Image 1 (cartoon, rainbow, N blue to C red):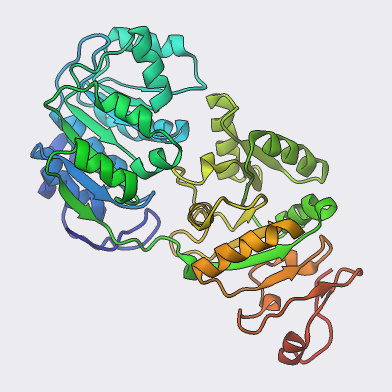
Image 2: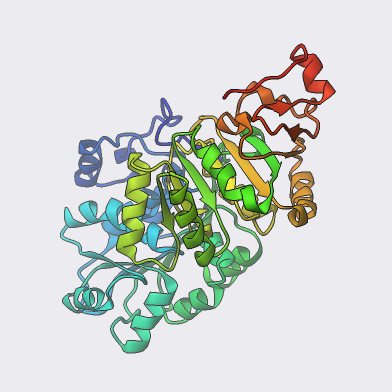
Length: 433
């Protein structure tokens, strides 16, 4: 199994000296990439493209943002022939609308340069428009499982001539409960087809998929240097129900870009109204919105028009958003794995970042389990919204994990340190007003 450390889009010199042409990528596609500023392949591309071009089944293990789209997209584009109406030659299955849109944006220009047509089908967008595209004929379909099955049941798409299947973010599809839908798709493919599976993990149900449906694959793994527990700061803050929204508003005043995670669509809608009432420029992202609304929210957030994006776990994976200063777990994640997925939206590409959990009194015990399981040493701290430290979550006032003890906050907005911090800072109070 191959391995290497990945380079992010925003890092320095690539670790591999191979060119796309050296991997077997056609000169016209290599030139198209170079014209858009992409000249050096990422490790996952270096590892998997030659096997994929040779027609082998491939399993690639790599994190979001590691270059998987071109790793499967280039071989798909190079190996396809013209498709008949309603019968695509390649199917790229993804877990979320956002990822479908991203894959479509990256691959459409490359496919068009070869006279190939690509269409994305997903929920939250008009089905009639998607059906019209399929009726005209498209070689490549990027699809979420639910919409694909809807179109299949209507007879608007047939998988009988699919030559290449791509399963992107396979572990995320498993986490979201899409395993039955994925197997529905796999059972309807021709016996002879190529499978390219990419995932952040290759264990559990993903391993079942591989053993059952993938034919003696070439396996490649990129050792992740993406955010870990150690690469970001962690804050576990005990807050009070009536003060919780104001705590988020205080955090927002000290950062440029922050992601706030909630568990439900209703909770997200409620929180966005409350934050805007506090004067916080913010947008909301969840599965109940139309695709257009979701894209507008993402664009405003990535451009910096708003500083806070309130999201359900649809944004925890599959979104390539850089420059997130703080991830706020407004509602606790389900488990330690979900904590890492959410928190991994910050501290990307070597930047600093903070993951902060806001905990009510009856959520503390579960948070302690997550903290201990992940080996996070930063203890629980009780805060109020007028605590000056909330505007500098990475500041020295929080102290190193081994020195910080539980603290209470004074009503005047300056915190009252325990004896450990007081000694280290020479006693007295500290706080910005």
